[in-house]
Image (cartoon, rainbow, N blue to C red; front, side):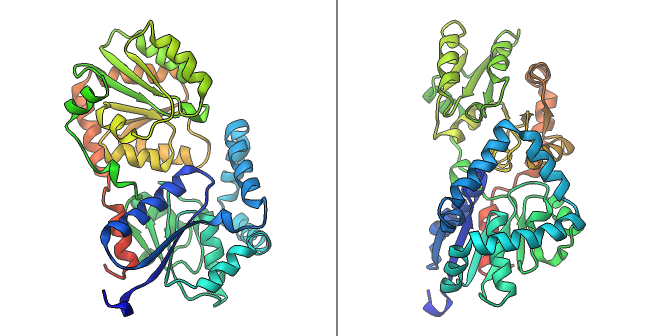
Length: 377
């Protein structure tokens, strides 16, 4: 590549919610695979804040989500209003200038050709610096949810990469010019885009190929009800096998491991790094409505049952999934069991949901974002 066409590209995420980092790493991975020759770096914006700020930011977010989701929901919905956010934006800007001063200094020093952000915090800071002519970087923001919040909007963003047309409309309604928005899909790791013969994977994982396979995720996030769900599903008069991913929830894993000794078609799994394989062999995925979870399931062509999603962005993701007939959302274990039974016993419903999922899936999102970065259309 001509060195004059090489670009210095910085991908910024914030480690408050795993989806933002996963999306950033998917873009980084795509750049590595493209052989573009650009100088590409990836960085957690919270690592460049004043001491302990990043840790406190993460603690506040995860504590609210786990122990006070109503508080997170209240702050989310109450600030997604033009006039309220007009004042909040100035307050956030003042706080960011102080607490994020190391990131300000870093961006001014580096002044990359392109900044790609997957979290609104880094978007806010980069947009502020660009508006003050402290940096001249092209700014591309990747929205990692299916419906946006005002917090994603910033005046100096050159392009937004969004999941679906609904996301685009949400940004336009919040004042973003339509010509700055590209419907690319949400970027995911390439392992979710690769596939293996289902029968081979089932054999590898020690699963039967004539049973309807249910994957339950979110156990590690401490979602209540998944234990009862697995137990009740195991008693259905339907030929099922159930995979329950417990993640870092050791207590849940140990309890369900004991339960599986008397219910052989319930498999308890701890932390896994082969989620793409588990999704590949499953017929339906049950989990929370995180943007990346939804997108990964769609990439595998799997319908979703979204269970006890957090108020705010996850509930809005639920709305899009239900609107397009790609899944169901509920807070009720009883309703989950009913829906699994219905999907398992109704091939026509399964086929229709699979078609709806296909309409929403955009597996080449990372490549589309690379084209935006490289000024291609």
